[in-house]
Length: 506
Image 1 (spheres, rainbow, N blue to C red):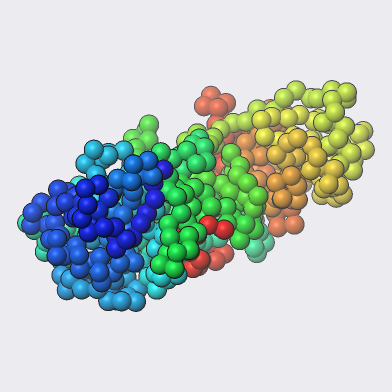
Image 2 (cartoon, one colour; image 1 turned 90 degrees about the horizontal axis):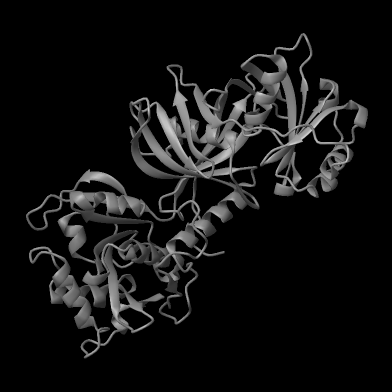
């Protein structure tokens, strides 16, 4: 366990390791002589910008493990002048030093300390005037700071020592977000399934990592008035708090959160870019979501969303998403249409009449057992085929009864009418997840498609999900690859910026 303390609370000298003199010595040992701050410079930062100079201490032995310090300016970019003076109340934080004790380097401590420092800057009333953080770094350290959420602005004009420096920026109180209607019906306005899409400016907990499992955790820091701040104990948990709060605020069936993992290459040697993708609901998280993946791919490629810097995905027509259901692929064609490569999901054999789930779902759907052709289940959902489309269109569902069934959701499907432009129709209900009826469910079509492919004897299908909004997909079932390709239209419905503190504990 670590804790952050202000540098001006440390003794100037001392036999122990937790003194200001120790921090000065660590600065001198961490940078070349022509780049390190002098003892006088360190004292100036401590005395003039004490609210921006924080030291990490081990709670075991009280020793300094590292520190971060900075000053403020009102300038939007760093210059020799803006870095040499502190403007009290300035809107831009200029980070000067990110230092880790030599024996603790390359263990994730620098990233954890910097993130905790930024958590505190955002959470503290003392520094509520700060809107963004800027720093300069040598080229080999640019990827490290990008992993902390900073974006490179290119070469800096600052001359500091003999090397070239690059400027990086992180917006602390404004994060772009967009909403896209995925698998929309071209014949109907505001159709398809809306999903909010947000590119996180910071690291999420790794997929499969448990809450609170970070090696480096921090006790609450104290503000100048002695009150503990509200920032979470470690950087991964602060991201979880943020995602949960945003998903609840959006109140959509899914909000997609992405983290940039860098350039990639596919098995067929296509130029690609990879992102980690998480799907949060207002009350939890799902393991697979088609429409929010479609929305994510479309929104990332759509320049007007400003989710990524201009030109970030130039000449990239393939995106890879690392998810809880494996790596998913999205391809963009020459017309800008997006195709998703998803896992084929199988369905069990028809459940017997004695199966409790079969009886429960039939009662909850309000249909006569004689109208039910098939009831099966897979790792996510129950699938119910009824005898005709009219039954699907006119269901009267008991949501409270349906919510008691142990399943993510229930798909109800039927063969389309002979004169329909579709092969099958469906609806999807997930009241247990707080989604009474989903407008369109891409993941459900990963088993609806193969189910009807077998029954109709063809692999290319056109499907309608007949919710009140309606949603449409064209899909291809590939049993050789054990995949389902989903194609559908998408439109951006709105773009904006979140101005709530992104690291503040609720």
